[in-house]
Image 1 (cartoon, rainbow, N blue to C red):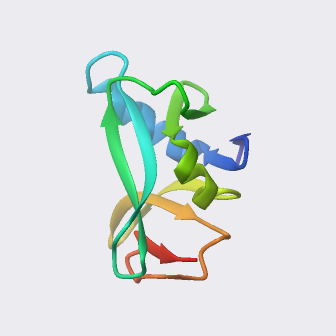
Image 2 (cartoon, rainbow, N blue to C red):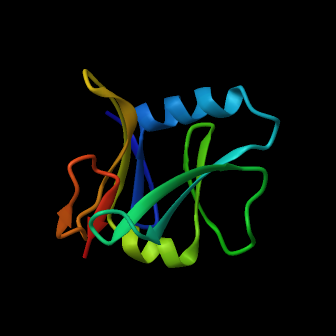
Length: 113
């Protein structure tokens, strides 16, 4: 599997393909934003949003035509992480393997440090 890293976050080919599929059905210029916010059952949670433009201070992760935006605060929580897309029996979703997380919930969308 080929992976492209920008800074400290990696975007796998599977995730890049799925992102490209998602934004292909959206207006031109749509991008995926990944952020970390307080909440969830473990203290922090990942948030995925489609946005029309990037902010001037966003970090841009690229793999082929796929781009992911991460704000400067969230990148601190995501340092060293891998963003992947998995299609399992229980469902398909983006998964973040975060080495900074000391615990996570069963669904994998929230974590603690």
